[in-house]
Image (tube, rainbow, N blue to C red; front, top):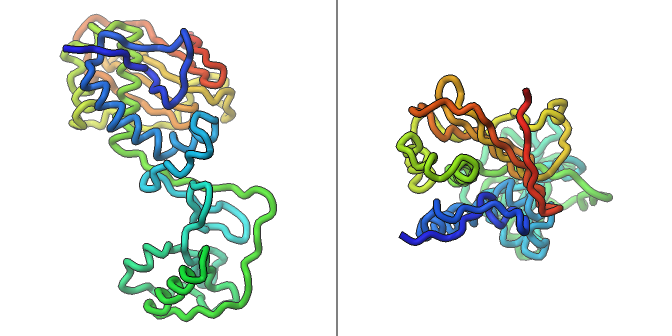
Length: 308
């Protein structure tokens, strides 16, 4: 069986020069290629992780159009156009309409694609006759006419009464992103690889870890679910709600009294995941925990120490 170098933190999320943490005899060539093409690449180009890569300069702004729009969506979080759907692209807008809800200042927004797929719309929900009852967004007159035609088909007459006010300066953006099996498998792989690096590959090859290995490689899901996002902060200094780093945090706990071996992964110190690597460890209780901070900005890796 051929083996090649596997990065504990995928290269898409930073490199660390001579400190780069890798495995050399634990991940086979075929599995490494599979993980890179089918899990790491997909997650790195879609979801919260993709936006964070752009935000922190790990992916150039010129490649913003490569983000998988099926895994992330965005809308304006404030201002006169609040709720307007936007795309993480360097040019162009999403053709859409915003319909004002009755007795509210909020709107439901529908893209052109969504309108085309509708057979009917609950018109009683909307105050479309108000001066600002319908907001229409399109880059071209042709697209605008298409939107108006779709509204007419659904029983809404559009009459232009003016232009929506523009935004001055920056506006907050609300993101909705996918946390699916691919996301959880990548977090589990990072946790597993890190634990193998810290505790030794032979240790993680025990049968106790068969379930998590099958989940990572084949998406065979044990019950209960082995990977869950949490709100638990991994650094003591952040317990009051403010972050002291944008770097990645990975922790492999000591074996719990219930014989669980648990790890934690938080890319960009944003959303922590709790990963159960083994639900019932059969060997000797291990009292040592491991943790590292991966500072991709300074390309350094530093050890974390557990609280006494």
